[in-house]
Amino acid sequence: MAGVGRSAVANWRTRDKRFPVPVADLRSGPVFRASQIRRYLKQRKKHVAKAHVIATINLKGGVGKTTTTAGLAEFLSGEFNKRVLVIDLDPQTNLTTVLIGEKKWEELNDDGYTLATLFKDALRPEGEPPEFDLEKTLQCNVSPVNEVTKVDLLPSSLDLIDVQDRLASMSSGRFYSNNPTDLLRKAVWKIINDYDYVLVDCPPNLGIVTLNGLRISDGYIIPTIPDVLSTYGIPQIQRHVKAFADDNAQPITEIGIVVTKYRAASTVHRNTVLRLEADEELPEVLQTYIPERDAIAGSAEFVDRSTLRQKYGYQGEYKAFRSMTEEFIELVEEKA
Image (cartoon, rainbow, N blue to C red; front, side, top):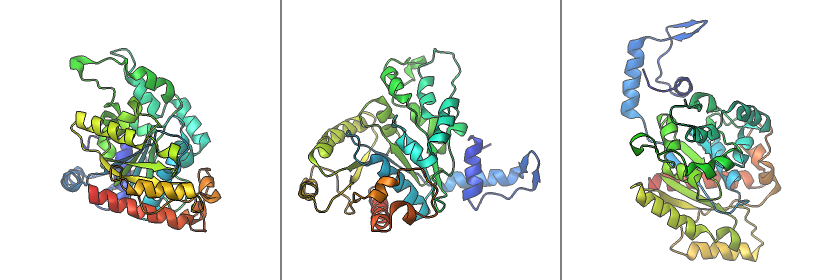
């Protein structure tokens, strides 16, 4: 009736107070009154809000992109009560293991329940059935932090490294309907608006997998260490994103630059931030800088914790992430 998978309906039942109460709970599952479900779906269609889909991107690795994305997802949920979907397109899979752990990732990867299967399907001979299963790939209520309860994940795979190089040769399909940069959008559009925020972690390049992430995004942030090498590629990112957006008649807004691993005692860091803030051609710099601290580096380890403060640190680290997330929300909603 809804045209979505079981996991989407399970999310509605858990998170939407308007969802009808079952008239019976059988061993095979709950039973609902059809008229109530039709009424709910009609109301949902009328009132559903559009998700904010934001890509995180930098052409240089090691700049805190994964930590920033994970932190945003967890703080959006735990502190601001937002429903969040994280889409991990980076073949390094770091964001995936931060949120579900290496053991769970290995199980999903062995079973083919990662985004690599989606892109592999595009390379299969015409007529061969697809293997990507959105419902089984979508991991609900991830994060080892107890107070984070509304973060879902579409996990990545190391196989994306090989797949990306082959996507340019994929079949154009009947009536030239297959576009290698449109694969992700076609696969996930039904569930996108079940969330308040969708965070797309892109690889450190501008290849086809990254373009798939940008294709579903309406904005992007650039996490960066404030030094010459980490910030050098920002204008290149701006040019490529703008050109891609123009080609697709799709606005992709510059949300801002997130300063990471900041050392207040470093002259290089202080001067680089001043240069970024003074350059009117560059995206806006968020005023909250994420400091370089052991607690933040340790947050990448998949360990059960009770609170975000326990995970990110008691010496100002938690406060910095919360402040950055609050500023992020304001900028996204202002530029929407």
